[in-house]
Image (cartoon, rainbow, N blue to C red; front, side):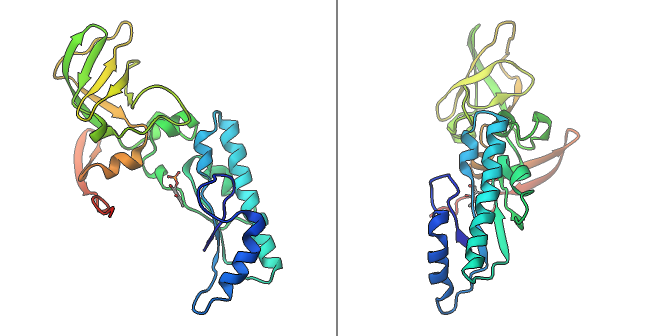
Length: 233
Ligand SMILES: Cc1ncc(COP(=O)(O)O)c(C=O)c1O
């Protein structure tokens, strides 16, 4: 699969250079070019749902257009593959797209909610943290810091290191093992209280933990070992 850069500016060949490179690839012995693919990660920086949808349409259209150029150059392609959670719903509907590879949608997170991809009720991964100190009326501290929640920011932008479900207060500061809550007017926290935190970026959080606890209707149903954990070398 040949990776095309449709605007993210990370890796991939630019659409205008794709046919030349694809022709070279197709001529290599033992290699069959199956198709083109892309990841529109710049959708995460769009500051409105309309902005995300525009990135998504362009993601699909640029990739289909690029596939057309490759086919005109005599290359047979099976797949035209888009993939990113915020852009998936729109990009996969562009005529000519054959595959979509979203990843984050398995859990969703606070960033997907902020981007308009989904609602809080569609999010499947939360962290249960305990309030360990209430040193001042405007400050409470939980036993979850960057080792638990990661330091990834909210996308596209915004304050906080995770959304506390059912509260207006937010996690203002993190150190490794502590999260400091800026207590909103009218809210109180007590030591020992358990809070559920929707992380900014679920992908990183899943990879920070050895296991995930599967809960349904308030009951633990399964414990999932994170197979990818510790595999970065
Ligand atoms: C190449 C590629 N495809 C697909 C994805 C999935 O993106 P998302 O997690 O936004 O669904 C990623 C994520 O980084 C990626 O790098």
